[in-house]
Amino acid sequence: MNDIRFETQLVAATNHRSNNIDNFVKNTMQKIRAKQPKQNFWRWLHARPFGQQLAFGVLAAVVVSVVSFTSYAYAIGSNPVDLVKRWIEGDKIKVEYQGRTFEYGKSRNYSDAAVTALAEVNTVQGLHARAVSNLLVPKNGVEYVTPPAAQSANGVEYVYPFFATVTSVDATTVTLHKQYVWGDKMNPSHDLDETITVPLATFRPFIKGEPAQATASVGQLAMIYTDDFVRHVIGTPQVNQETEYFSFVLTHQLDDIKQVAAKGQLVDGKDGAIFEPNWGGGSDICGNNGADTCGSNPISQSNSQGLFVSKIGPSQYNPDAIQYGEEVPVNGSQPKDIIVRFVTGTITAIDDTQITVKTSSGALWHFVYTAAERAAFAKRFSPLKVGDQLGGMALESIYNLDNRTIDNAHIMSLAR
Image 1 (cartoon, rainbow, N blue to C red):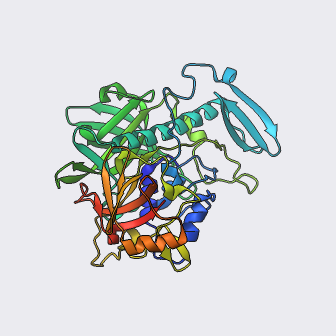
Image 2 (image 1 turned 120 degrees about the vertical axis):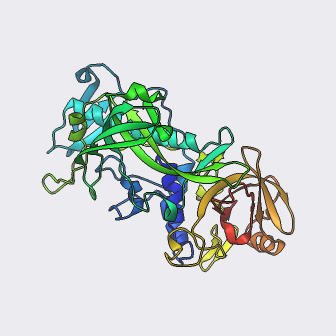
């Protein structure tokens, strides 16, 4: 996956008290391919080129290598005919363009412009993922995290990216003419004719993959993502929710893009639609903890050693953790302001009540873990010691984001 927000929110939707959770995590860690879309917020999983079965990992997605976009991954102003190569392989047409491979069923036909349009859209999806990851990194005393699903302005429904022309920019707002939605099989792509205004302060424009002035986008077609975040002033309890608009100016015409957009149609009973099977990437920035990197988080490793015990044996998941996310009843009394924060680092201290972990930023996180729990762990594995790598997920209130001491009830998982 490309979307770090998706990973943290997908984890937050997991019923970690289930007897099957360990099997679920193992399966996702082994990159089980996604099947049919769900009719809920987790459709984020399917905001990818249609027809593509994505290999994904709930945890691994935050530790894969960073996608590098020093420039657009397609030639701007070049003749596509000189760049696109096709060949037949079995029942598929394979297409090579700028070192990238696409494929589609032989019963379909796509122009060169459609191929390069899909390359552009996929590139923009990666650029969006990078922009979100960069926003999560604290800057100027401010950090952003994803909001609890219950507090999201958009609720639990995924907001599909749309294509719009930037019609005007003034001192406080940006006006957009929405023309098309990039959908999937459950919500097919479709035309729009709607004009909206969004705050200039939360409009984040990019041209050729680089940040730009909003005025430079006027009159141009852009692919726009709508994302909710919680903005936190570090060192204070001050938080507020913002909806950010990530806008990426395109070089292709909308008609070219429509050729490759998901419309839910079948050909000869098969999908056969064009897609890019090897496109993807992610970020090693820790989910909802942008000050740190989680490139080697043990919770994403198949050979990790869980610090807890479930009904079926050793587990990285804490059976005593509070309910959160979709576990919390709508009318229940449990807190609905909890998010999942990923943490990984080196153990620097161990005492009878807690384990201290130093992360990549130098921050010290303290996880309550008693001497009795350590003794039980040592019966299953070698004893914990200073210098070990430890990773986990902490459950924290968005109103207490400066906290670095995690009690037992707020430890979702720990693993070495």
